[in-house]
Length: 562
Image (cartoon, rainbow, N blue to C red; front, side, top):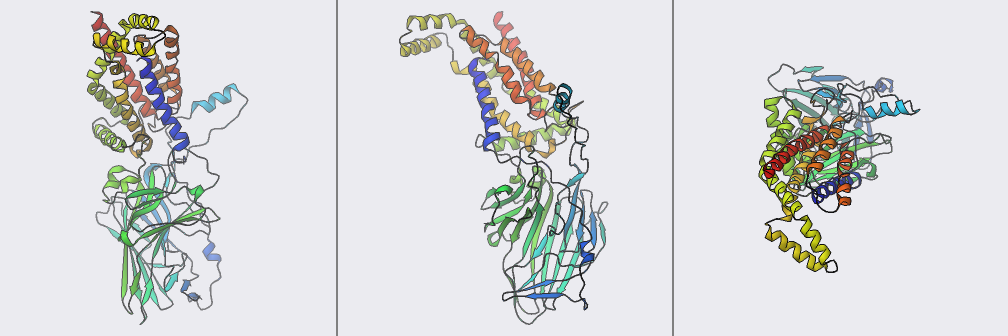
């Protein structure tokens, strides 16, 4: 590659790095932390003598609470283990099978080890957390996710109201049909509420119906609010790039709220398709029944509990009648194919946005093709190498044109030097004579950098794919590379990539003065520095692209020599 080609690569990578450092959304850990175990606080509460619900009344509404010991209900499928609590008829724990919090097979980063070896530092490596990924994280005393309350209604129900239930356990591991879990409660003889969760045995979608029965002769106005509560540790260290916090699809756009900036209630809507709480690779989302009448509220309290609430439509329930509100829940991984099946644009929750506008489609296309190759090779690293070979085949003619152009330009360098000397005081004349020289020798000066400019969008598209596609999370290649979405823990592949970049640079026809040529030899070192912390899968792509480019350049040089 000539200096313009190298500069194009370096500037593009620099823009990518600067964007990630200064303009991308704040980095966040890829996981949702495990929940803090709840103590048996319910049993310590004082029970009223009559055992009847305690009514708290104000001028606008009645809030119903009770003091009954809560019970847990376990629901297990082939995809997850869920623990529901009768306290709030809500979700106490939700663990995803097949997904660990950390890669237990991955090697430790060698940098801290070398630092301890050559310095007086005695940093201990942290033990890996091989527990299943937990989507629920609340502290003691906080309400659980999936509570349904009725603020701005005739009758509100406290988030910690203890419901009855129709089952103590549901086992869907070998089930073929859906099963339902019903929570129910009657409040002050005025309203009966049922929360009916319907579970699919083979996916992450859960149906939720909220039935409200008016037990009085007068109409009741009920406005349900379904909420997801999540504790976010303010001292939590930043991790790999991604967003952790509220996310909402409103008016066909995706709105993400930074938790640290959530210092007051934020309301979005109407026209809310879905909302929820996300991390880099996972999402807990609510899909609404009537988007045009739905809004979302987001807030963070003084205890760092973030709440995302879906406010539904107003239900006016006549006396002795009932009303029903339905939701669809998706609690699981940000798998593009699974999210797309929801038919509600939930796949937009994956952060495939690019620093080059309009490249999101390319990231998705590359992901689909890599998954297609994976079906045959059962290794995403091998799939990436096959993808690299196919891209090289597609761009082979352009590569040949580029190398031939650089070779021809090398031949006329003495003539260009003579022109510069002859017209050293007339830059316009130098430009005119140089272009005339190019035309005379049928050389296109842009053809030398055209192939690399075309590959830069592919590079950035693949970068986003490897960074955010959950298919590559903890996906092994071979030996020490057990996670293609993380950096090489031993930094072997980026160093080898730098060596191949140096070889390619040495094989490139030298143009310009000797000092410029020496400066250009530093570019492989700069690129190596950039790639040290890039995902291993991306480094593998660039490494094998370099190897193929070296082979192609050797072929062209030999052919032109003959």
